[in-house]
Image (cartoon, rainbow over all chains, first blue to last red; front, side, top):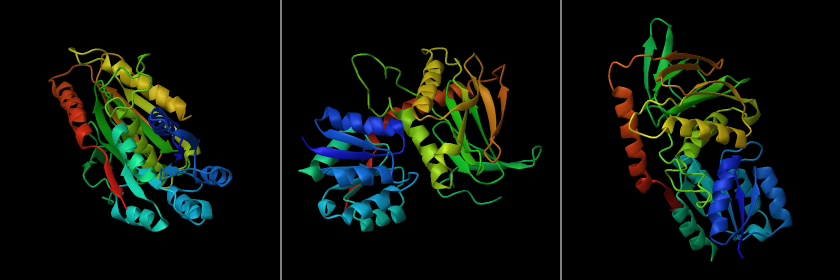
Length: 120
Length: 204
């Protein structure tokens, strides 16, 4: 079973992402901000990370940058799931090492299609 | 007039001479966030508005939405993640995220909710569904409601001052025309249409 780390500061967003992925057979671990996610990622290996951008503590772009610096996460697919649709943020995310950019709202089928595409 | 925060150029603003303030007027489906000394206003029928602000920083805003789907909690469906059923989550997420992005802190956020009247004659009690959603969402997010004026047969006009968190609600006792009802019906139909165009995805 593929393991996914889902990061969002909103409990209802975590629930929605988690529910969608679990229903499709993924093993999902949740984190509520970048700091918590980084700690969890260091003690477990994940097949993919999906993260919000604006979060208290460590934001999603910093999280991706930190993770890319770790040998275990050099090639792991990392998707940003965000309300940010501006080019600046997107470019920042790309440079930090994100694999893809999904603008909220997502629909479940789209999220699964993208996840299956990047994770294989 | 001070410029709006990034992303809110499309929101209509006017100067209220009586109040001596800039007022941003939002329509169903819109939201507005500000740091400036200005008001946000909207007219609600069965729709609901959450007024959320950072009590320390004085930054906040208001949304205006309805849930076109009322079967979110049917026992067989589990959690329905369809766009229409989750529409309220997105409306709340966008408002909260914009406040946090502009310097607000989750722990300082306070919330007032308004609307959810039973004014659409031909429909089930959509207003009540909207109220239930807002309360459940806010409790899940551990955000506390400090004031509310919800339900009943009245449309409402709300003014909100994000700098201070003060809100003023006028109940509209007699409806001279069906503008509010018509606007909400159009809005509900638009949500279904939007679903097809949702989700902008880019793989790098």
